[in-house]
Length: 355
Image (cartoon, rainbow, N blue to C red; front, side):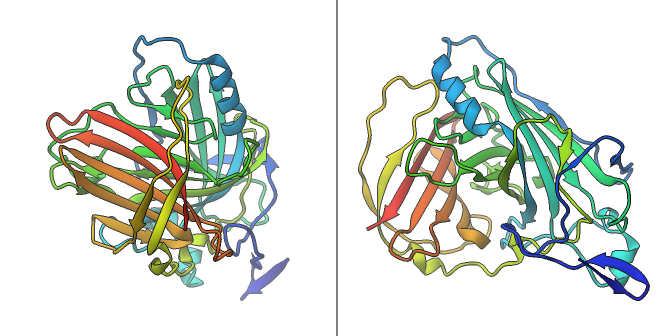
């Protein structure tokens, strides 16, 4: 539906999984995508992690992982301040003058991810829909980023049998080069599913660690997304005008939900694991925010950096089944690095439930 501000037509928001939105269905990119020049912002990055020779991966595990992670996914992206978890508005270069005149300042981007696994590599193409006043036009303004993670490199990239993965460098600098230069770590967590079937919703969190100060080293970039269709390689992009009121503007949940005893109900195997013992651990939980150490965001998302003996770890948590007070679940993925040389020490991933 449409309405008018003065003489200018705009779309009326309708509800979606990711918040009220000015949306349009997925559209073929033929003659529609327009790559907007962005002289004031760095160009899209291609990050390729180097490969090393290791034992062959379990091919059946790779195939299962590929089926779960691949496809076209769409949703809403927001970034949060590394100091106090406040949502960050878009850079001024991305906001059309008309939006300012209407008092509409977006706090995130609509996006589409096109993901596949090819030759044991995760290839993720991000198509970020930039705000535009051409809501009834024949194009979408986007910028593209491409990421490639080699699953053969099991010393730095970990893929799990539920379709989740963690990727990042093998070694982090012990001296922080500046938060804008911090190397990002990727944490992809699918929504918990009782069986081994396909899950159509997940979160992707990208964050850096400051090893020198043992704290969060960058703003936190979060993508909340749902499965749309099979992998198209960017031939279809979901998006509209960019005037979406996203999930990031929802109020954060009461952190008190985390207080009490939690039991690990599932420890996820990586695709290189042949056998791994199941564990049942109970622990007392809770979460008190702390600037640059512990951030609590909407949708039950959290990031925590902690010192554990000779390691500095970053933990991403996602509280699920929020509407069912007696069935709270929380998925947690963690990467830990050595304080001695900055090398990756371990990665683990599990889901726990409140008892």
